[in-house]
Length: 396
Image 1 (cartoon, helix red, strand yellow):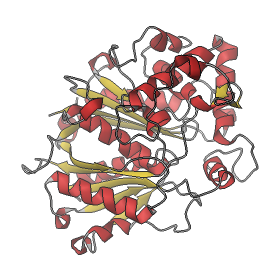
Image 2 (image 1 turned 180 degrees about the vertical axis):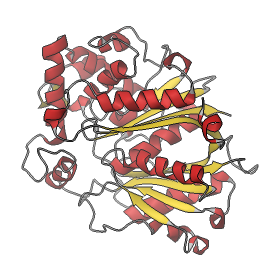
Image 3 (image 1 turned 120 degrees about the vertical axis):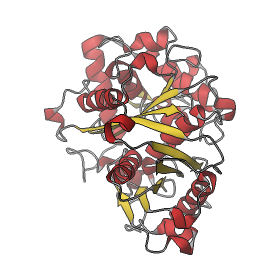
């Protein structure tokens, strides 16, 4: 039973906005938020005064001094005065957490049009500050010094995986190469360069090991950026810039925070979120035309092939080696370049994933466009698969 049948309400993505991702020295957190909020509202065909609620996804964790950013979107227009606005945080899944909060307001009937924003300003901060901020999402390392940061935690996951299932260094290099190749077509991407498989698979001076076995090309970059989407219950405005996209299903699942209570390669919370979203949408993996998944590190994407059910456990490498997840494969993954090439401004990521998926389904993805795309999934996670969100979107 799809969301509309289950709740009696149609949830539509009716307008969106997106900044480039990268080192945006001339932008502030406020300017990023205002830019995408204004763009999303205008493209939805609504006026600012028709927005009933604002949900802002932002991790922050000390990256910027302003710890109270919920009302920044109101800078778009005085018509937004007194609109309820809330900042939502769930580590790297803050953007999807904000979207699901907005969805629940629509389903509750307390709002008809919700503006969802994801934003983060990171590149101005030093490497130590960024590393410490991100490690705040890990139970064991929060507040402690680390030379490898979150890369070290995912490297440990990769080592567990290899001990259990065999070496995957070449497969991880192929995932990185795929996403860099896809990112060339994305005008918002931070790293728009096709590096090739040989470079991504090989340790070199320009591609050193960051945390064994992960190389630099296995790690997403530090980024600034923002994305926004207007979600609406019922009928979409007829004056929108693009065809609306339907939210057919969604799921969230949180796993235990202490690592000792989680199997390091199971990603059980992500599996539960996938099952809930697909179940609500009433579809299977074979019904999807594309997926945007959380590849903060290439090992995360490899595991996602198994978690979503594209391959059996321990066989994720088949999906990349046999071309299943390439642009012309049976389930293209991360046509946007993913976090790996598009960039990963933490709070913006989940909203960005929904925006690029909506662009595909509305036929407005430009050079990224997958012809005939009708249904997509988005997977976004916080921490080491602790906070997990999946959405199923479909063309109207």
